[in-house]
Every structure is written in structure tokens, then in C-alpha cells.
Image (cartoon, rainbow, N blue to C red; front, side, top):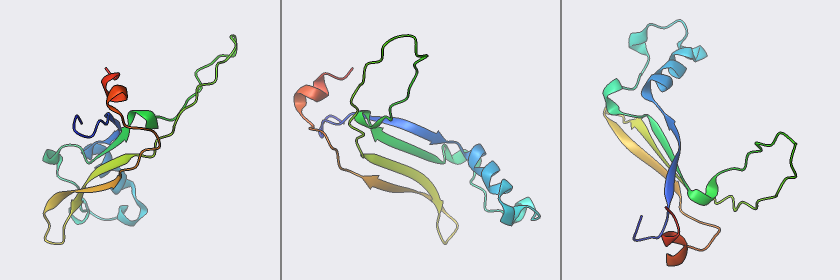
Length: 116
């Protein structure tokens, strides 16, 4: 996002097949026919995408313990954008967005230009 000097990446994608399988597995739908379950149409693309700031990745330990560890300080940036398909009351499908547009680090031109 050139105008706001933010680098945003996709953290998680939930496909429609997985969402429909989760719906079918719910207790309230177990003994119902498929026609009564409000499944997401397959032609709509991904069901949900979660976008985060590049500084928002959680730290994971990949060490086997053989070498001395170096502690990296992560900023745990809270920026999030969640885009999800929802069904409206009239039966049509649309994209709903939930966002948290705050960063806990500076957004400068120099930092943005240093990203690949």
C-alpha cells in the first residue's frame, strides 16, 4: 500500500470447502439433510482472508537447543484486516470486513522502502 506506507501480508486463508465441512460437522446440523444447511456457494472464492502487518507475525521457536539462542524482539503489531463472506437476509452473499487499523511502530518512508 504505497500511499499509507504499509506492508500487508495474508496470514490465514479459509477455503469454502473447509468452511462447508465445518458447517456439516456442527452438532446442530448432524441429522439434517444437506438442503437445510446454509452452505457457502463454491464459486465465491475463499471464504475468509486475514491480513496482518509484516511486524505482526508471532515468534516461533525453531531451535533444537544445540546452539546459543539470540533473542529477537518482535513488535507484535496489532494491525488486522479480516475479509469474510456473509449471507444477507435476502439470501445474497457479500464481503464483510472487520479491521483494526493501528500500528505500534512507526510508518515511515525509509522503513517502507527497505521492504522487498
